[in-house]
Length: 117
Image (spheres, rainbow, N blue to C red):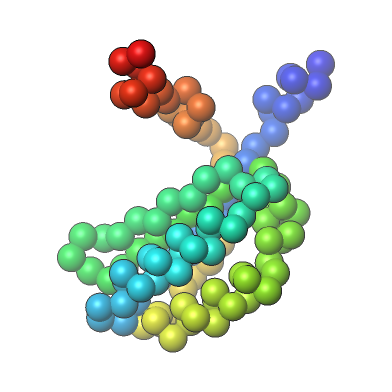
């Protein structure tokens, strides 16, 4: 029965929408990737989107729970925020969302290498 209730649990998404100063998106991307690479417990994936030809972007980080996300707000997190803050043209708008629907779950997508085996 617990598998049924696990199926009903939804992930949570932290979403940040912002714009960087001219020429700063690449540096911000590197800092984002460095920070995200430290996430473990409850971390389910991350996406960084860039509007083509601009410095505008959207970061989406998926978590099992808000508590898991909060546990990752540590010294590395604070250092990364401090390093990235000056790159923004204006402070980003951040929100939390409950993931209500998932289509094409990463666990169900097979790599070309696995398919060829």
